[in-house]
Image (cartoon, rainbow, N blue to C red; front, side, top):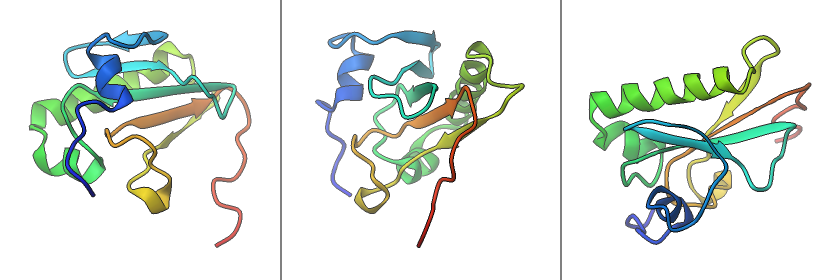
Length: 121
């Protein structure tokens, strides 16, 4: 995986250069609605640090950043009222998994019955 690109779209959103439909923000993360939703409710949670992937985040983020980020994921799911019906968390890692933006992020999808994640291998 390449070096972190400070001009990726999520970095620009975090800097306020590109607007987003914000759901939640704290010192560790920003949660906002996906512009191309794949479920009735589809949000993204982005850590504020410059992390390319889950592996990058898991190995380089401080314990406070990791704890704060996953608290933000939980808080966002609560604010979206997805706790009762359920939701899916998804983080793509690398090109083969479909990661389109080289900034670690988690998708929260819910708001109705979701289809199978993988239909064939």
